Amino acid sequence: MNQVPFIAVEGAIGAGKTTLASMLAAELDMPLLKEIVEENPFMERFYQNLDEWSFQLEMFFLCNRYKQLGDTESKLIRQGQPVVSDYHIYKNLIFSERTLKGREREKYRQIYHVLTDDLAKPDIIVYIKASLETLLARIAKRGRSFEQDMDHAYLEQLIEDYESAMSSLAVTEPETTIITVDGDSTDFVADPEHFAHIVSQVKSRISSGHPR
Ligand SMILES: Nc1ncnc2c1ncn2[C@@H]1O[C@H](COP(=O)(O)OP(=O)(O)OP(=O)(O)O)[C@@H](O)[C@H]1O
Ligand SMILES: Nc1nc(=O)c2ncn([C@H]3C[C@H](O)[C@@H](CO)O3)c2[nH]1
Image 1 (cartoon, helix red, strand yellow):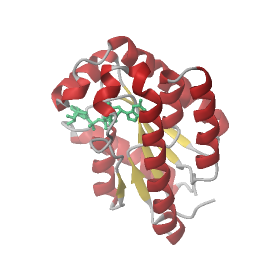
Image 2: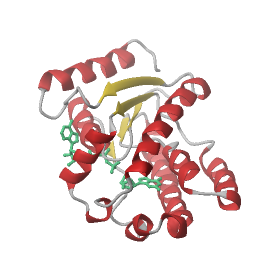
Image 3: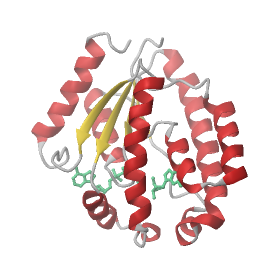
Image 4: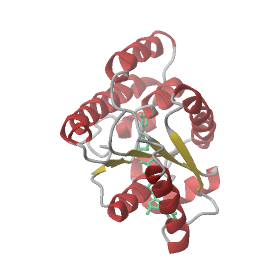
């Protein structure tokens, strides 16, 4: 077991992961690990034609996160440094199980396990659970052009996929503490009390020795 906390913020598209992870990293004085999005060369084409581009897109995300987390593990976690990340590596499987089919899905699963099974897993997941309405409002507010015509059914499905994924992680990674934040009623950006409540939940998990 690691000696320092590794915290991942998770939730469906636009839930506020990067925002909350940045706030937590600043508040807890921890380095921030942010996922690479804009550099993904398949992003725009993927949203125009999911079936055609999903394998390339999922492989790009997987390889990037594998490299990023591997580096973070050797440079920070194993050196006794805590980390806050705006994703959990498991996210790859949540998306790929939804976007890939048949042989591609099966091959991806195998590659996923080969690459990630021995990577450090977070001790704490802060899971932002938000409704379709909230996610759509945040996606519109952020204004990334390639996301503006996103199929609502895809997003709705991902909300359910995240729910199932968090339930299965609770079983498969019992040492991980999952803190669920209601992303509809909690506004950690506008309301300092809401943010303070999340911080105190995280701190209590760290100081109670669970995890680490
Ligand atoms: N609690 C909040 N209240 C209001 N706006 C928010 C809140 N959290 C995030 N936002 C805004 O919503 C948008 C999406 O947030 P953010 O980029 O943090 O989401 P994300 O979960 O990291 O997205 P993605 O899944 O695309 O990586 C941003 O414009 C951000 O400023
Ligand atoms: N298909 C797919 N697989 C992933 O692993 C993945 N990770 C993020 N995304 C999409 C969501 C946002 O639009 C944008 C930023 O998070 O990229 C993904 N899409």
